[in-house]
Image (cartoon, rainbow, N blue to C red; front, top):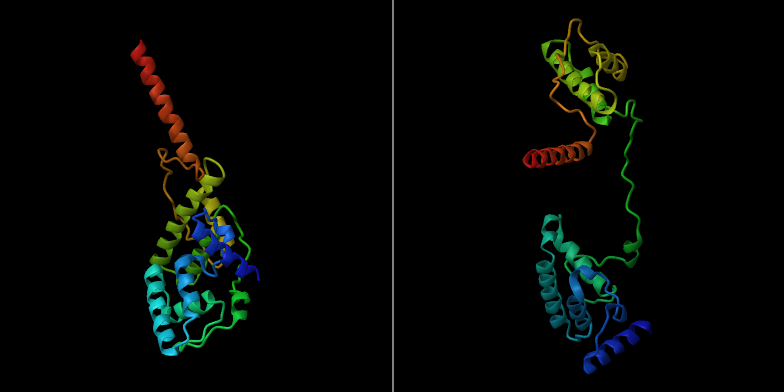
Length: 230
């Protein structure tokens, strides 16, 4: 009853050229295709000749495909378009579809839960990816390749440590963290050194570099203006 009332309001407003708001119109089942497609489907349901109705349904599918080109990125996209056609019709459509008609209950089904098992992060300032890399290195056989991987990992971990903690950190602290995070499956080779920290590198937290660089640029502009005045 409510839908018929809104349809009558649309027809009356069209005849009188009155401004019509979408809130006064019939609700679209899939707004992405627009109201013209909805009207095509409404007209499709009034066609009595079955052959003509099937022909018109295939034409609407082509229009929907043009309006939604990204659907080609999905597998079995034609099946999805026919499902959308049934949904737009309110599941009240009698055509010879190449695919079975979806059930109205399918719109209210909850998606399947993706099974994800996550362990708690042991050290937040290193992150979960570091722990995954440590697990990968722990499975490697001892040798030059594994030693090079441990050194590269330690250098990166030192950078992360300096970002979130303090200005200096001993190599032994990083080595101890690697062994601890690996549950002592990794033994850092004796004599391994990471080299000196570059004093010119600014290990600031994410989001702080832009604000600091902006303040430095403002200071430089002010200094230049003061120098010109002198």
